[in-house]
Image (tube, rainbow, N blue to C red; front, side, top):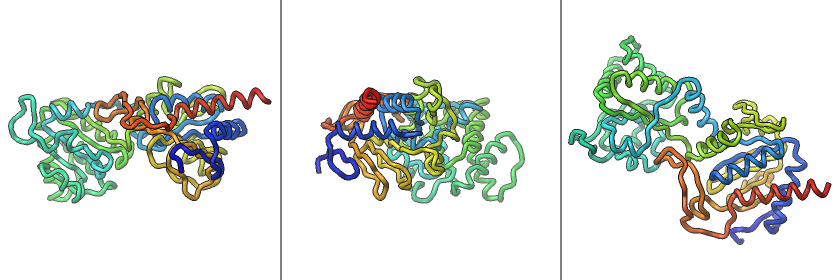
Length: 368
């Protein structure tokens, strides 16, 4: 089977036929949902243009965690630092929660957690503290000086206790737990340049707010910042692109002819589960597609198939940074970055396919 083969209900067709079929589905749809699973800036822009034109909704599969971060930034603010600066300057790194090394496999290398500090810092290894580490994760960082084991559901209480003790308030902890927390707090206070690394996947919005509140408190006497490790990082690409195109983040709808943002109302998962949408266009430039119940027609722009789902049209698209050039969010610089193609192929980009679908809608409208 050719890599660039397109299908309509399992029947092999040309790219023109496939995009025309998608255009017809969108033209007949009452409320289409454009769900990005992985896409570069150009593809996201094309998806937003098409959603606006069809009165649809734009969302991202990782938006749940991204909105936890956004909620805190909207209401509280946040100190952030790039991994490069953290690697060069930090003499203390506090890792919070489990799964960090799974979400960011090269975290230890990027942050230099196994290296000697630089730029005039003392010649001993930097302090690596881990709050909520599990056994297999602690083994990944042999230079960790202090660890407090905890399940994810216990992290909010530990973060709250750490912040309360920093404010010299009493907390109810066991003797051993209290001693470990006090030792960790003293290490944070003795820091010259500290970084707290966490993931919104293991913390809710309130726990994140307590964590950035601790950073703000510590900054009264020393210097601290944060690095957030979210999903693949691709949600940030969509968030920033939607921001400059519509004035809002993703989870934005265009049903009234103008962009409306509502994190609950335009949550793609909720809309699909409640039967509010009648068409799903899933855009996955290189990531595995999520599974959805076969309640509505699905259009898949990607190289993976929805096993057991009602896929009407399948169009393969290339992965940005591998099959074609593209711009997306780079975790190492915490900004959008150019990704040249590593192994250029003939697979079309998501942006090219979406623009071709838009042309098909124009032809549909002209024939009516």
